[in-house]
Length: 118
Image (cartoon, rainbow, N blue to C red; front, side, top):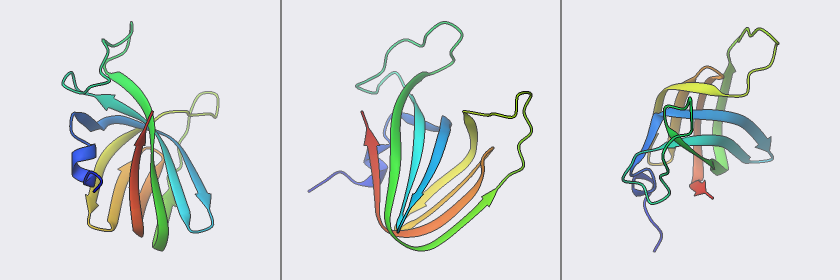
């Protein structure tokens, strides 16, 4: 039996993590993430110079989506490109997922929610 979703986020500070990208494909949504790891995480390393967290790449993959609402925010940047989006709130409850971040708001219900880290 696989790990529960909650256990996969042990020693990961989601609200300090960053969203890197949103990929929509058929009935699947992938959120590319830079997870902020707590010192107790097995993959933790001391943060690099100028970094506040040990960032580790990963993704959230949602399959069998029955409800999807993406509310993209208007983000103004100096060069017009933003590559990292701070997370304000994050919630997974059963098959429901809600997240608010600089990218915008994401609300969905999916048959499968997988947490993938390298």
